Image (cartoon, rainbow over all chains, first blue to last red; front, side, top):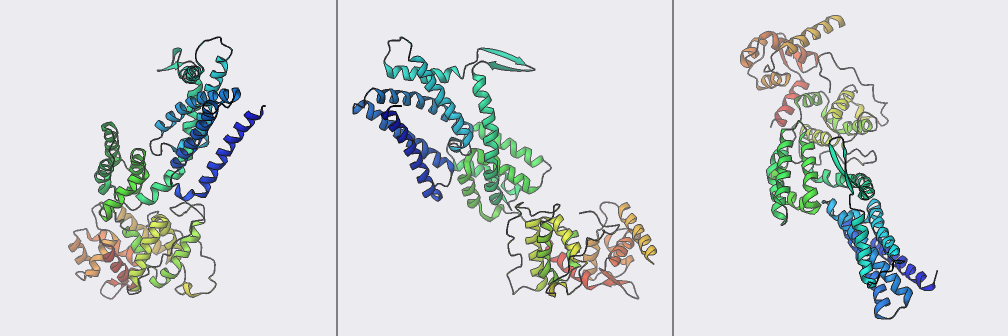
Length: 387
Length: 93
């Protein structure tokens, strides 16, 4: 390997390390991975520009010219692959470019272009070298996206040819990237959609989001409206409907717009989840002072078992302070406020179990320094409905 | 004694199960008792428009769950029942 090639490889590696360093130093500034994706590709384009300048403007020699031509061919493949990625994931278009599956797919496209340029080398074609890079770059892209014939499998017609290679990779990428994106999407949507009333947001939120955006197509709006109608009819909880609507809107308007729209709509779209009468009556059987002291602990213990979990699902999640911090309120009102907070955090069925456990405790159980292990859950009376 | 209680609860439960869906719930009966408008089964049944046997079954269940105390004349809200009635009032929406 010549010295020049080693220098070029060194430049690329240095650029990669530098970009990664910039990312980790200013990680908080990159609120979304898409920003980092743009930075990576802009940095790579600048490196290629430097290589081209070195080769053509400053007389870098034959090896530099060959490297620059390869670079251009590779860039055509990378750009086509990257554009395909950007158009596939609407909620965070540039994020796939820096995901492992996305990078792999884009690299395949770049490598295909480089291979095509290499194969044109021995051909005795009297065309200018820059034109060869274009022909090789775009030719490889066209080749891997073409179907030679249409195969009929069952009731579907599939164009078969070299395109099948990329389609296999694309399908694998779709799955891998969807799995990768599902966690951050859920983490973002859950906190901001929590506590909203589906009836209050089903018309207002999509409408405001679309008005905040300037380039949402009529088809996309119609699609969301149809989904809202389906959700309204579906037998789902208010929370599940709100989450589904939030995920649908994120696909089109993105996280920031959705967040801004919810903030703009204010308190009018917040829901009030009433406690069931059954829970209230069960809660009344416990002394409010005892409930205030011990019910959060009982719930926390229950959340560590396999059959009852905190709604947020994370076993390491630190439970908030459930005690109502309004000393001026009467004890019973404070206890009720605490019950609302516990139900919101653990879910009503878990609270019913905790209340049943606590109702077996002696009245002074909350004062004991080392309370005895909780009594086993009593069998419900014959007339009690199961939680 | 335990058998008698168990039999009573089974009867009460069967009566509640056989009641119409529009019949009063335990919480409805508690709320009426807390309002002070009725203190016996007959007046409760009249007030709530439900058959006396259904009201009797619900009252029996409330007594077994310590929401009601028996008195010489009939029944009254226990400490727990009074608290439940206050909670229900506070959470009414």
